[in-house]
Image (cartoon, rainbow, N blue to C red):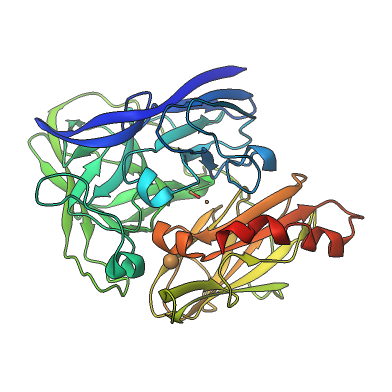
Length: 435
Ligand code: C2O
Ligand code: CU
């Protein structure tokens, strides 16, 4: 068993030489420490909250038992001064992350997030591995965290003008010429979409949310909505080159618009020998369902005017939708319908899904995902299999302001033989405090 200690505290966050903001960190660091585990090896994380407010930790993407999912559906909030012990056994190799699951709009913006890497037995060999946690920060004129809220932030989600890699504004990454690196990229932004480009050069995607894909896919850009992850092979480059790691212009139909912006600069130094060995076949991913499989559920995500709140972000017409339970072992084929005029990153807790189609078109390659972008006015068909981890689960938009506004669904995973009627009403009162 592997044991970790995490402590959330108020932290002075140095975003660049000499410039600090008052943030929150795990173990005094932003991002928090990289937690490394092996697939199949149990981990225990002793978490102590030393913040002036309650919090929890959600293990984003990991197939943990329901009680360890870190949401307020499954555990009491960890109050200031309290300790909570998370225990689970990561089943899958991949790039995951951890973050609070309460007051997310403020707690993540202040710096509470970190990478959790799970290694498998057959990883491709590269010359170097880096983890790049991307984020942005919204500061006011005095350089302090800008006030939270307002209509634009509620609609667009919070975006800031300071672009961070591993907690530092636009750092330089030094790389040796002739080498191939594996970059594990995590988009920890509240709302920002990163249409990733590395100096316009081709790079190879080898993994997504749920670990390796079947074979490397060469691209010149990749879209990472909020909370999404991607593993890529970068290089080889030549000595003296310099490349910008950028987010290309992407219009997700918000009020605010951005052009192409830089997150980091790669400076290529002298050549070093390469030991990289990338198999052409990385993994076999079984297809869960045919592209035209009949959906057994429709999840409708919408945005509409509200007299009381200005705007509502809804699932099936409600805030904090209570969805029907699903049975262990029963294949789920869901149509996620986005009727709104803007993009939303859909996130399912605790289970990986496959995207079968987007507006009837199959995706470019097969993969396991826990986040998928829903383009405006679109239907995304996903398939997933509830394995034997009964309990309360959820899905939601991962733009924190939309999530907070109620664009989420709660549902139970139940074992065979469970009375569905009881299971579906059992939680009705439980979420009353959200409304
Ligand atoms: Cu990464 Cu419910 O969240
Ligand atoms: Cu959204």
